Image (tube, rainbow, N blue to C red; front, top):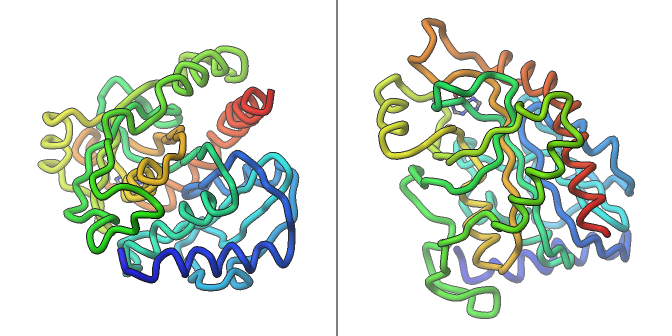
Amino acid sequence: MRNDFNERVEKAVKSIRKITGATPKIGLILGSGLSEISEKLEGVEIPYSEIDGFPEPSVAGHKGIMKIGDDTVTLAGRFHFYEGWTMDEVVLPTALLHGLGVETIIVTNAAGAVNKSFSPGNIVLLKDHINLMGTNPLIGPNNDEMGVRFPDMSKPYTPELREMVKEIAKETLSNPANLKEGVYAAFTGPSYETPAEIKMARIIGADMVGMSTVPEVVVANWLGLKVIGLSCATNMAAGILDQPLNHAEVVETGRKVQNDMVNLIMGIVQKLNN
Ligand code: HPA
């Protein structure tokens, strides 16, 4: 993380403050094919191009729009490490949410199922993660005003909120058994994993694999944010089925699960606002 990271965050916060004084306590970061969730939430839309220091995301299925209201601020469109963004850019949105006064973030992603008892279409509540990206967003000088040099990561996904989500799923999902719980392992991508890599991920304890989320959750813990992580299992990971993986399928399954994901997230937002 560069020395000027907090100035970059402050600039981004200022450009939002010129448009709205809203101070939502819940922030959402939406993954591939899940951006329509923001349509159900109240707020003004601000394209990333109007946020100082924000790059424009480029992947299909990712919009670059913030939607900010009294209860929630949603970021549709992520900066992935595999696109060539620096880790500072990857975690800038998370730090911006914190800078706007958010206390809890809900991070969603599309991911491959490593656990063979999971199926495409499952929603997986994250309980922990494994960083296989070979880097860490906090490498570099530490900004002591934002967080400590060696942040604790023993409860990366807030335990009370995980219990809360499990209860909400019973009432909001068309089939409550569609909610699983698991560990997310992050590779850099952009190539999907090999069967041997997926086998390794399973052996070391992963249930899901993806190319995002871990940097954001590390920084969220550093900043003292509470975290809920939700993966949409869009496909079985490489080598489980005898078929190739493709991005179109990932986006398509994400869309199909969106209804359930929306209902679950709306339930979470309602509960957190009580
Ligand atoms: N691997 C990595 N990232 C992914 C996958 C996968 O199988 N599916 C969706 N995102």
